[in-house]
Image (cartoon, rainbow, N blue to C red; front, side, top):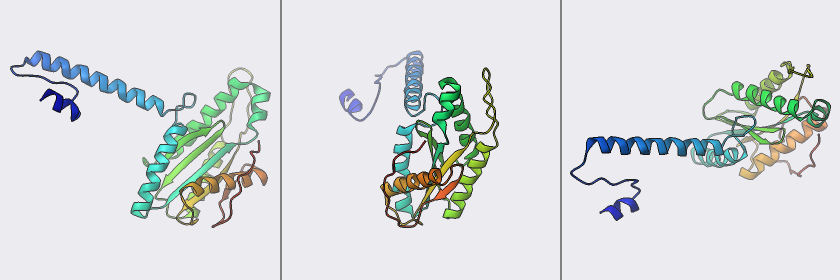
Length: 222
């Protein structure tokens, strides 16, 4: 019976007659273990610098929401964000101020996306990804992206120490399913291509993906 219980997922085994004190002690132990396992799992999905979701969390959640969108015929929008001229910012003010800038922007983005099923993640370096669920049209997804752009542009980035005050801007690319008629991997590529065009067209702007266009992976701009 013990072997069968453990094979079916049990974590402990108590025989009769039992002591209530021992039962409570074992329950407390397993609750503590569960809490620490959950903490470890949450930490593995959290970006160490910005405290928002990391790339691993984004990839897993994106795959999940894509399958839900296909099964339930629900729209899914992706916003790719890159900080403009971030290398220049780092070179001018140092990596400590650069890290502070990343944290500020991550906080602003996370606070501005309120729907529980949406996700804001650090995609890599100075790039962020925002996954929006149940946004009915490309225009609405672009409106959300524009709101994020304005929020960052209007924030005064001043810090202790060298005080690099002033404006920091972001460029944004947007793609949508099913409006763009793209497959799962193409949505990321389409948003990335739109982000590249936003950079190439002058930065500090939102560009939406083109319907059913042929995507060529661009080289990264600053």
